[in-house]
Image (cartoon, rainbow, N blue to C red; front, side, top):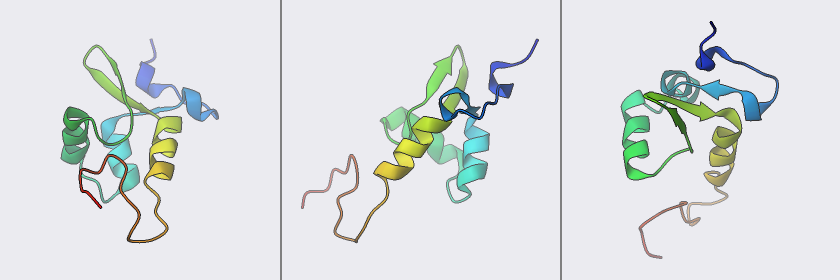
Length: 83
């Protein structure tokens, strides 16, 4: 039986990454920070099946787009800093 995490597709809606795979992909984000983001409601959206956490590739892409800035004066999504 194949693991749900092993499922890959050309469609980002049907491709999932484990937290380790996402940390490896982002390279500068440690695995522990992904866990902290999940606890704090930050970072990319994730799915949880039982005890298994996965990130949908399309949600990662959307989060990266939301996190893209044009200047240092851009407000961070979910930022608690006031302008």
